[in-house]
Amino acid sequence: MTVFGAAILGLILGSFYNVCIHRYVSGESILFPPSHCPHCLHRLAWYELFPVVSYLCLRGRCSYCGVWISLQYPLIELLSGSVAGALAWRFGLGPSFAVYLIAAGVLIVASGIDARIGILPDVLLLPATLIAIPAGALPLGHGWLTTLSGCLLGGGSFWLLSVLYRRFRDRDGLGLGDAKLMALLGALALPSIMFMGALLALTFILISQHAPKAPLPFGPWLSISFFLHTLLPRITL
Image (cartoon, rainbow, N blue to C red; front, side):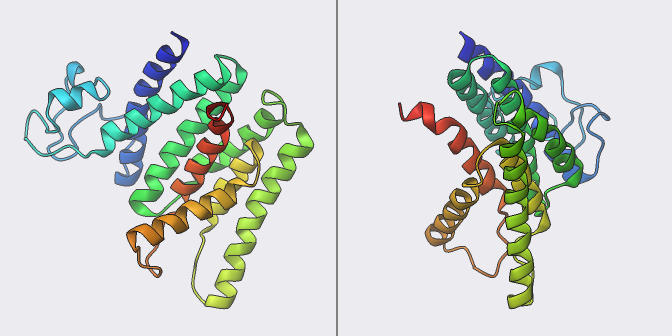
């Protein structure tokens, strides 16, 4: 029941994450106007706001203009619900669950924005990092030394890689947004996430034949690595 309730909470939060992603990209306020179709601006009725269920009942189309609704919406909701349920299974409903649930929300929104427009927003990452440092040291029990060193090592290593890439290739490679995201992740877990993320990104490039010179958002791969690092110990028992 604990896992089921957490999953329902995750679905509801996923709907809010979709609002954050879409409205940051479009430049709208996350508070006003109320939820609406991004194509025709028709205000959604209450029964069109149920995560995943409303999408299925509407058959993936706006009820007013008939335009297809992006798959991003149910996928983000399902991802959020699955992660919340897995976190409850892994940690129970304690302080660690709360910290990781908030971190998951930040990562989902940041990764969604990064995948859409190639930006990891400071307005999201900087406050989250300031919160992650005491959260990693106290509720998660990593201690101040481990948390601060993880933050500095994670962010500093990515910053150094970005500077060196620019120096030797004369063009941008990793963005500073990736360094800020890695500082956040380093405060909550181990910097080994960096290597997991690089491996996942490389695998994606090899499988999809993604053009090496085309920009590849790295934020989603770092986020996936964080989820694997956080949840894998329980899964492998």
